[in-house]
Image (cartoon, rainbow, N blue to C red; front, top):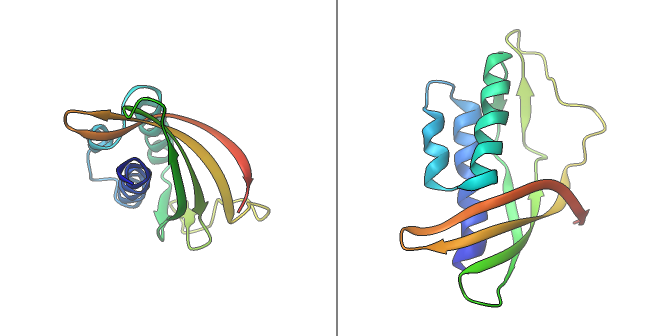
Length: 129
């Protein structure tokens, strides 16, 4: 359950940082490490440099976590961005009209002494949800 919740927290932090460019990208480290942390900081930094701001929140549902050792988890989750828009500095949406609203992704999560952290986010769609 906590591994699945780590994916929800990951998206909450990404949403928070994408919506408020005054917040430090170092907050990513509270929910992600390794490739996922670098990917999130890079994407958020690129969006900020372009003057893009997110409006709305991502919904994360149907998290299913599996593990063979109790430390490393594969988590699939349905990511719903139907309430999310990204706008440029003039307030115009930069979201592609054909963007799917709900898709299932796989994340890798590690259980560390400090808690659960997303470590790998390949940004690859597993299926529709």
